[in-house]
Image 1 (spheres, rainbow, N blue to C red):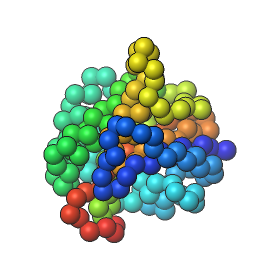
Image 2: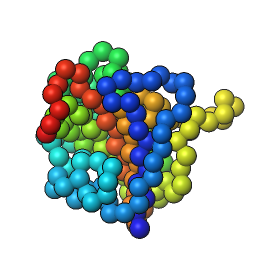
Image 3: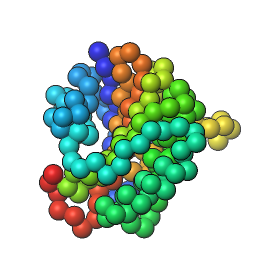
Image 4: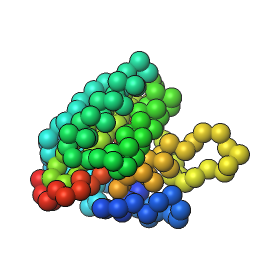
Length: 181
């Protein structure tokens, strides 16, 4: 059975770095078939829905280009200012995890559905297993990427596949855009 961990943010606004966020694990079918059905699991992301703004392969050589491409596409979609900077940094942390821990290669897909921008990053690495998304001790080197992605976006969803690999999604709500899809 596949494991989905959802770490929720605050739609429409961030609470800042202080304080914990709610964590909910959902067990069941995968997060969606890619056909826009959103999967059968309540709370699972509708990553297959909406318009694809960017699709790219992740490699160490493409990291800087991807960061710029995500920034440009998210800005064109209507994300600006600090929320744009936060979203781009969160995506970059996920991309870095693919390169460092997920086998060095993966895929990135940025989508927009109504007032929600979603970036999905996936790899074929060994998977995360039981991962705790929390700020590590100040003396611990590294291990802050998922925590940062959680803090800087309106939502973080992490999915380990049955046969390995990890998919992580971050979302941002676009200001001044009516919902729907």
